[in-house]
Length: 134
Image 1 (tube, helix red, strand yellow):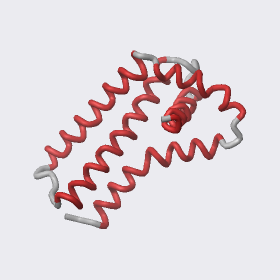
Image 2 (spheres, rainbow, N blue to C red):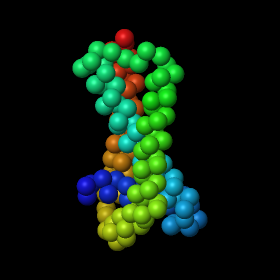
Image 3 (cartoon, helix red, strand yellow):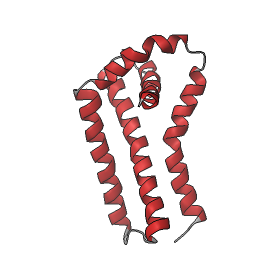
């Protein structure tokens, strides 16, 4: 759990640098939605791997697949909104890692790892579509 908190802090730090006020609601929401897109991508990637290799089936229509993906993203975003924004878990994470971040010499590496973790499921789904067609 500690590594996931650190990934969240890395994303939060990037979003807060782009905002005039570092703890503004817009920076918090931007970070929360980026994390929701990442987690939603992981859920959809695991679901597509399961459907492709275990069940040997796929969605019968593109509309059904789109509705399922939209539902996954919305549910994760609502859950993260509750956890991070309403319960203010993000502020606890920021307070926990803020002092260590300024002393960290691997800031660029940690940012790259966070982006890589967020992008892997989408790259995997694209390669799954290209290399293992229906």
